[in-house]
Amino acid sequence: MKKVIITLILLAVSIATGNAQLFVEGGVSGVYMGETSSLDGITKELPSYFDLNLSFSAGYRLNEKTSLGVSATRFKRAYSTEIIDLNTGDREPTEVNQHGWSFAVFDRYKIWGPKKISFMLESSFYFNKNTFEGHGGLAQFWNTTHSLIGVKALPLISYNLSDRFSIIASTDFLSMNLSYLVINYKDTGMKTSSWGFGFDAQSTIFDRLSSIRIGIIYHFKNQANE
Image 1 (cartoon, rainbow, N blue to C red):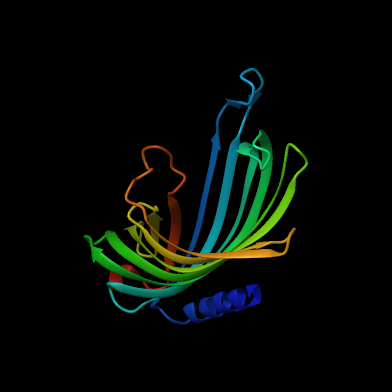
Image 2 (cartoon, rainbow, N blue to C red; image 1 turned 135 degrees about the horizontal axis):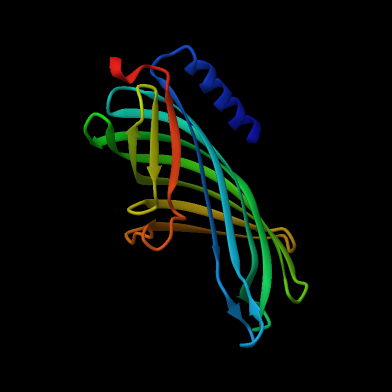
């Protein structure tokens, strides 16, 4: 699957170099959160969370309002000294490492905006795979793989920095997501599956910036000539 993704992206980029209507986009998002907690009221633990996502997209502008494209994301996340409830009922520190990738086909539609600013709606069909590896304070170890397929819609905002470059930003606020999840427990061989639907109507922008994603778009066609 990874080879297919890489092939599609390289194909899109090669086409883009010869077609003025295509664009490429790269993005990065990251967050670090930390807090102080205690199991016994005396010893202090420091649960923390780190997230890093690297993404790449290539798309085709059908007209001034509509674009189509493909995107891929490579991400690695790590939790450290997070305090959780184990099967014994005790609360112990645990460490979890997560890594994975995602692939999507998307379309974007410009809803409104003056010449430099665009408010858009993006809908996508995506597939991602995550592996979780961790161990707890009682030497428990687990290894699970999450395979997720679904459709998602969310708002975007872009701003034209120049005739060739734009900056684009998005959050999970006002996003809708329908997904099917399969979890493979490698240590036991058991599998579970479930359907899910979500609508995020509560903005976390003022609480933390973890849901904000920012990217840079390069337009192969000079926007001033459109």
